[in-house]
Image (cartoon, rainbow, N blue to C red; front, side, top):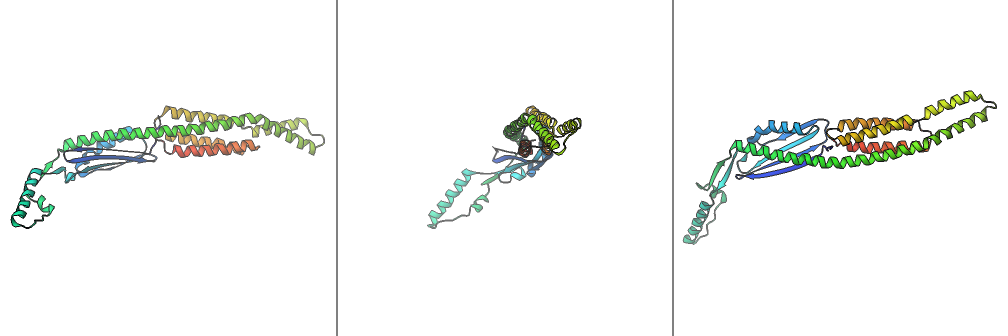
Length: 289
């Protein structure tokens, strides 16, 4: 199965007052170029993340972002509120207002400063690291699956263009004998009109040489061969983007030769149509890993 180089995935997990969230996104690139954005409390996961990316991916500019949210989460701790104490404190404030017959306003920040209302809870760094790596593995699995789904769509689009190229090739094959014979008759007529008694042997030699120059059977056969090789690469799957890009160059080379040898509107139109199809495939193949 082939894979696209563009994809996105995101997963998050809540734990002990904090939230871990991974995002992975990628775009086309000639090589694998990972870029990591990690909170200070989880810098230790970087080597394992890079190794996992190296094992699962071969191309693409991949951006991995890990977010650790929760108050003081960057320092590896969270803040919890003693809700029972806070309720008692607010009840006391209201009671003071009743006794003094004056409403009492209070700043929430001042409440948080009251001893015992808040308490810092340290997050175990080892546990946090393990859970971050486990979450990354899940996110990476979804990311690879997204690449594969898009790769399946790309393969379908490329195969459609390959089918169209083969149809053009068959049209050229079918018309080629008539094209060559028509050109032979045309040349023969011109020679006979220009020369009263032409040398028949020399004329036949020239006709044979002309037929060889305009014969595109070799180019047509190579087009079919390259189409078959593209299909084989797609079916084989894996990291075949560079190979497919090379095959697009070879297909384009043969279509150019077909056009340069063209002596009829049929072969000219076929050459132009094949080049358009190759360019459409090349645009899609730029996304293949």
